[in-house]
Image (cartoon, rainbow, N blue to C red; front, side, top):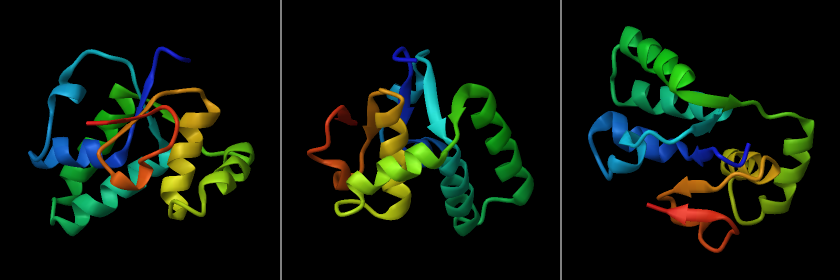
Length: 120
């Protein structure tokens, strides 16, 4: 699975709302996304007053474009290693990348100093 890159939710939110750097997600590279990111993205788009049908369309698009990785008990337990530095969802996202040995791409400074993390 090392050919994939796990993209943090914030990168997709920037892409979908027209903010930030889009080049990374525009490339044809195999991307993975945590199932938890689908929730994070939908929640934030709802806060931005995106219509429900558009949010549904975006979620379907993300599921087609990304390899969706589920959080299981092993990842949940692994996330404990990062829970002092990160909030619960961020710890689970990073643990998903770590457990699957995937590079983690983000723009969130909370992840600074964590191995295999790349900032865009």
